[in-house]
Length: 579
Image 1 (cartoon, rainbow, N blue to C red):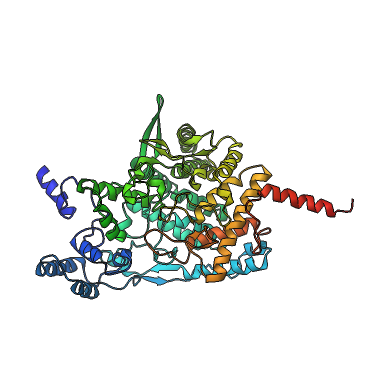
Image 2: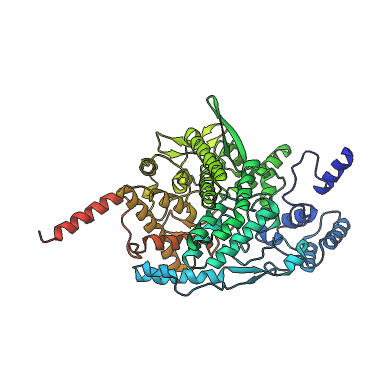
């Protein structure tokens, strides 16, 4: 029986060698197998994602049978022309399984627009509100009736996508999208997106990285609990919370069971979380790049590399020097070691979620569960302080389980401020000093993702909307007017970058290059994408928060500290008063 089970396991893994990690999903078209390998290594498309997003014209068994015959006929080295013809015969163009969707709750002039004093910014905000209609998607019924023909995972409710090559949902992107939608008063759209995520947790035990089967074994930064909190805050829909509280608990449990790591400090052991995806093979959507990168390593190290790349993708930071530091060549992706690090932001997100769960259960009258989550948050807070906080530098740092703290600068080093996971109010002002000491406030167009230029997209000179949020709303928690003024100035810088690029290009981008004026970003594995869900959401959040002060005009000189600018303006005002 044991032998039979082992044989079945090997067959299920596409006859992979014993000891190999399982593939990202079972599909021998979209996740592993000879067809995927031959098509992706032939580079028939400029972007590997294009092939794995194509749906099948016939049943997968028939496609695999015909491919097997074609491969046999050419001794498993199919000429490019024949491969192209095979794809044309058996696959449909990308996007056929989705249809455009205009949200029924979209409004021409949401209330928050009235807060925006600058006329140009108000017009721009109206244009951003229009973009939601362009990013709306609904999945066609055939994905539900014949799921085996698609890489797309069926979701019942329509949703807003990031844009560009990303025509399916993405987990952590959706939080900033939802914040923007709530400001646009599109609560039904948000509820539908939340319901999709809750359904995924019920089906798979977690939310996949994105809405494709090849993403199934990895998640993304866990923000579902926060999404629910924001929805309930806007709607007071306590019934929806009550109906789904156990599903929220199930999602957090996925991280506890599958992503916990014990770290010892002195005599004490702390449980924290990491990104960790023990599944093998190249990422299907970046297959040729992963396969070619692996060729630079000994064969025995390749599966580990592919697992680490998936963990990097799970982090949302795909890819960054953050996951390379401490490796043999910290400028090369082959040195990636994501699972060896205990990330500040992941643990801040989970700390925040535990606090929110405690509040949820309390509001629903379940005191025992409220206390349980309150205790979990307290334990995590103690672990963050003991292992990740650095009093001398005034920030938190990723903990490398083999080498100690990674003291490089990343905006994620301030994630506990944003998440409200700190106990000493003076911490916020220490973090401001950390930003000043790191010299990141001298960048006029946004906070850089790191200070290393590796060519990866989650590194210098790129700046990303969610990372601006971590810093701006983190600093804004301070009671110090000076620190709050810096938060505002950073908001002004980011809005100016988004607005200026939009004025030139009539588009919003997923990332921006802040090194030479604000420009669309670059680097990484694909061309910069337009859309763009989370950039739009973050811009609307800043326009809502600071709309009475933000301007579309000339920027302040970055070298002059904002507090000094404020003092000079105050002094100037005094000089004009008729004393």
